[in-house]
Image (tube, rainbow, N blue to C red; front, top):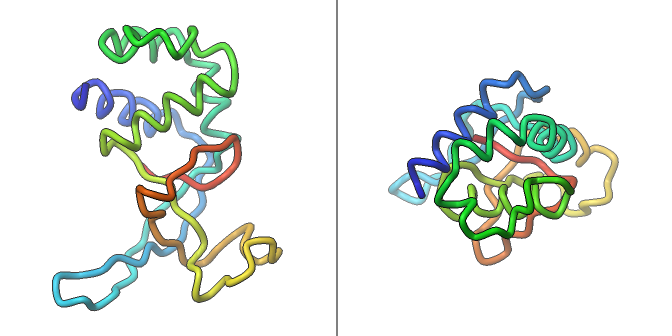
Length: 134
């Protein structure tokens, strides 16, 4: 399933989904946090691309599709389930605005964050909105 997830993520990344440039803060081995350049996509654009190209995506995941929870990717909930599967298999991640820089998630500046961090897996929740990286 990891191979299928990687193929789907590569396919989605190649679709030219509108992305925004930002810096991702990662922790190095010594505990030092370093920003690296990356691009994120908005959840609305990601889910629209998934539902638009659902036939191609379903052909790439015969094992994942066997769970029958995707229901042919007809709705946003099925798309969210696919993205959560990709995240849990390590093919992509959800990122959030850097909590130190944007303590209030409703702050208008947090809608286009200059720095982001990967959301810990135990707090991971896929929604129709949000920021995602491949």
